[in-house]
Structure formats: structure tokens, C-alpha cells
Amino acid sequence: MRYQSFTKLAVAALAAAAVVAAPAAVQAKKLKVGFVYVGPIGDHGWTYQHHQGLLAVKKAFGDKVETTHVENVPEGPDAERVTRQLAQQGHDIIFTTSFGFMNPTIKVAKQFPKIKFEHCSGFKRAKNVATYNIRYYEGRYVNGVIAGKMTKSNTVGYIASFPIPEVVRGINAAYLGAKSVNPKVKFKIIWVSTWFDPGKEADAAKALADQGADVIFQHTDSPAAMKLAEQRGISAVGQASNMKAFGPKAQLAAAVNNWGPYAVARVKAVMDGTWKSTDTWGGIGAGMLNIASVHERIPADVRKQAAKVQADIASGKFHPFTGPLNKQDGKQFLKAGEKASDGLLAGMNFYVQGVEGSLPK
Image 1 (cartoon, rainbow, N blue to C red):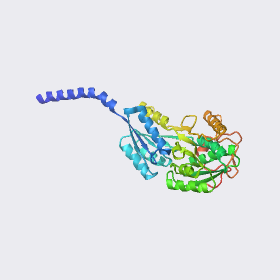
Image 2: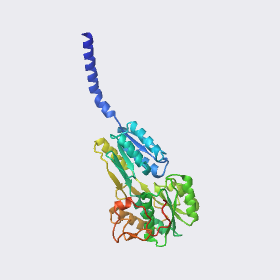
Image 3: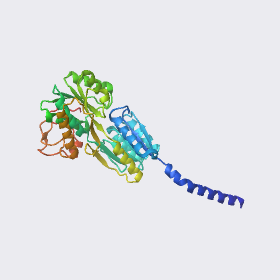
Image 4: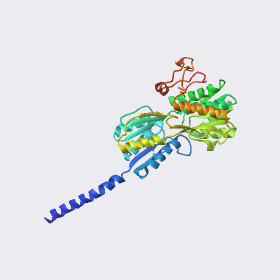
């Protein structure tokens, strides 16, 4: 009887304690948010801007979230391993932030159906995998207008990473922007087959400068090209973030990726229980892309012209890919007044007419 009485009293006491402790435990549970980065965070570029998204989440939710990030993760098996580790550690939502993380993300997501995944720049989705990206081509068109006006040699260099539609769109958009204000402009393109390799990027920038390019674009992540432009007394365009610190005289402008609002909204959706698999592709008008640090040495009329193009793109009045436009081989792909569909843009695997060279196989 004593044992039974003690047991009943102990159970009652534990139950009472649980009732008191339960609300505190619920309140103490933090949403775990993970980010997988392809490069180093540093103080510039693609990964740096994604990390600003993580910091925006921390600022918005404070002690309601616990964030984790892993940088310098190669695309391929390592990406799958790191993503799986974050899932096994109980993260509620995981952002994988490079195109080459797409298949690893989908594979891991199948194994962890209760976890939400956000993949940047890919096209494969699942019930628990959303995709998101920025219309970088809009910023490249605007900066193309600036480059077309500012080049004296009529030669613009472009350091390209991999021949995926995102990169090809950017080259075409920059060229069309430059061509719209300078019919004599030519683009020279060097493919480096990497997102981040300062040595390769510096060599490519030097080669382009040696070939007469006096403005350099890049779709790679290090500031090597900007530094080379500063050293050679030529111009360059910042990639993904403001790179003015590396080329205070060289940088004409920068197209800056703004991931913060999206990351905050998606984390909040997980908290609210409203998260769904979606496909988001926002640009200047949505506030996901900003044109920053337009150099004061650019003539006022050029800055005004670029600002108008930017405003027209933001409002939807103008689309960078508006016909008539032909492919490099002369075959028309957009009729007069026709605007490129998202499907066409998402699968763009050709140069527009006027761009020299050929796409890598």
C-alpha cells in the first residue's frame, strides 16, 4: 500500500510538473534553420549575399530560431553529405544555395519528408522542396547599358562560369543592353568552369584586358577581376554584391542580390504552418535585385538613362528580351514586340545574334 500510494503521489507530482513545464518547453523550442554555401562567406559575392539572408532571419526572429551554415561545400557528393547531416541534426528548413546542389537536395528531401528544403536556382521541386531564384538578367541588362556607354574600345569582356541557362541569359542580356546604346560594341567571353577560383578569374580578366576589353563583367564569385580592372585602369561590374572596396575606381555599378526578405518569409511560413512548395523568380520589381553603387564618374545623362531602363524593367513596362530578336545563327526566336516567356528564358542555351564565339559543350 505504501508503495502504491508513493507511486500515485509521484506520478501526480510529475504530471503537475509537466503541466507547468510544458508551456516553457514549447516556448523554448527553436526553429532550426540551415544554409549550405558553395563558397566562402567573405565580404563580397554570391555566398556573402546568401549569408546576409541568414543574418536577416536571425534579426527578424531572434531567439526563436537557431541557425547553422556550412561554407565551401563542393557541388556533388559533398553537398549531399552536408545536406543530409543538417537533416539528421533536426533542422526544420534547409536552404541549399547553388545550382549544383539540386539533385543532392532532391535526394535528401525524399529521405526526410517532414523537413522543408529551399533550393536556389534549380528547377526540380517536390512536396517538401521549393525553388527560388533572382532575375539576374535584369540587372545585367541595366549594367550593359552603362557598359555600352562607357566603353572606349567598344570591347566588353565577360568571365563566365558554366554554360547553364542562368549564365547564358546573363551574357545575352548584358550584350543586348550594351548593343541598345552602342551598335559597335563587341563581347569577348572566357569560360572558366568554376564559380570561385581567384587564380582562374584573374587570368581570364588579364586575357580579356589584353584583348582590348575595357569593361569586364563576371559570373564568378571572387573579386579577382575587379582587382585586375583597378590595376589596369579599366572598368568592371560587381557580381552579386557591391565590390567597390576592391575596385573603387574600376567599378561602374553592381547588381546586388537581396535574399533577406525571401528567407525571412519562408522561415515565417514554416513557423506558421503555411509553408508550401513554390517556385519564386523575382527581380528588380520584387526587390530581390538592386543596382548599387553607380559610379559618380559616369556622366549624368548615362546614369539617368540607366535609371530609366531600371525603372521600366521594375514596372514591367520593358522586358530585356523583347523582339525582334534572333539567335546567333540568325534564326528568329522572338517576333517584333514579343516578350520572352519564362519557359524560354529558363531553357536558354544559345547566344543571341551578335555575340561571338560558341558555347562550351
